[in-house]
Image (cartoon, rainbow, N blue to C red; front, side, top):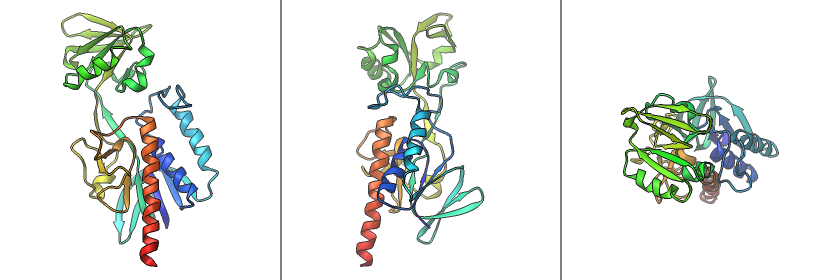
Length: 282
């Protein structure tokens, strides 16, 4: 039996596995190979790695994990998670893998507004985070494709970066086309807006059903409800990364730096869980 199985090989899961490895906890990292930022070729706003390909970041992290004898990695998709007494059972490739604790770090799945051409630019010239992608459009016009009240806040945040910020209801855009140096937004009224890039507001959902299978509490945001250390409503299950919604924050945080931090904190909570058990047993 493993001490911990970490589900998800993004920044949160990789950091959790690293921290657990450094504390000599027998850990298995299961990575499906599907990532929320899978279409992104340059990650930004991450100290010492600004502009690096997320795939390269994952490869570097995997190489670091290989130095820890108590950490295993497996490239596979998990089909189910369930309880069996004091153990948590993870079904992988038809085999049941057992652990005392779980760290859920599978991330979210984004559903974009149904505008033709929009999805093809997602992660490149269309993004959702101004901190991660705004600077790349500096000094040029950008669009905020969002009809929610938050759109005006996002526009004001981008004000010092872009030459112009257009706030557009997605329902008014019939197509998005890539141009030589940006995007052309074809509106339903026949007009065209030429912009360097656009910021969209996807509907984000849990990528996997494991939180539901375990009966975990879910916040109104759709994130798994946690405390600041990634503890969920189940004492032996932890959640990290943008699939988790810490109660002290307004919502899940879509950021590499935040995901890494949450992965470390969840691993710390796991280590504390075992330390508390040992005290009780004594």
